[in-house]
Image (tube, rainbow, N blue to C red):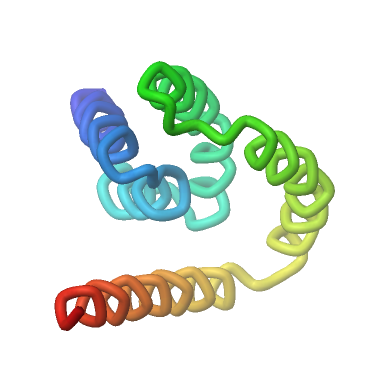
Length: 122
């Protein structure tokens, strides 16, 4: 229980600071720290991210940083994608999902590092 509390606090803090959540923080923590399976971690993360996203968006709106139209479009279009993704993840072997998730995290990290280094040069 304490581990879940610490995961929630840390993920919330980082999500608020960096605009990241579910896939980047909750899933690895739920899998590594709490011992959930990859699919269970992803499913749990989907529900856990709702209050984090709502509070983060509410706070960012107060600072004038929220682009409501873009958020509505992305959120609306993500619904059918989520339905398809849930069906797909439950049809695939869990090992394939773990590898795909790890590769996605590495790709994101590489892109962020590339952008940060390019910005530093300018």
